[in-house]
Length: 127
Image (cartoon, rainbow, N blue to C red; front, side, top):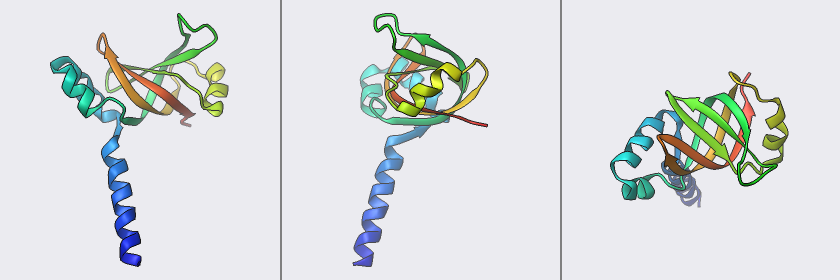
């Protein structure tokens, strides 16, 4: 029984590790998109990106007034976090300022104009 539980734990942890990327992967993700969008879709779209970012700003969505996204940077690349539904993250938005450091976790949606777009982000300030 213990062996079965250990095996299940290993499989679960390994599956999560394969679907979760950190911010050091951002340049590779963007280059993959530029080289082959079909491969980007298979390799990265829908996977979780978990990293530390510098806040560039909080802006209102153009077509969805009252909804905001966070523009951030890491590894010399711009990353947008949108579709922020987590109550703690939403409460944090008015207090985020340019230059602050945050931990963000979100699902990779797309790359546009060399910028990575994440959905369903959760945000926490790093002190």
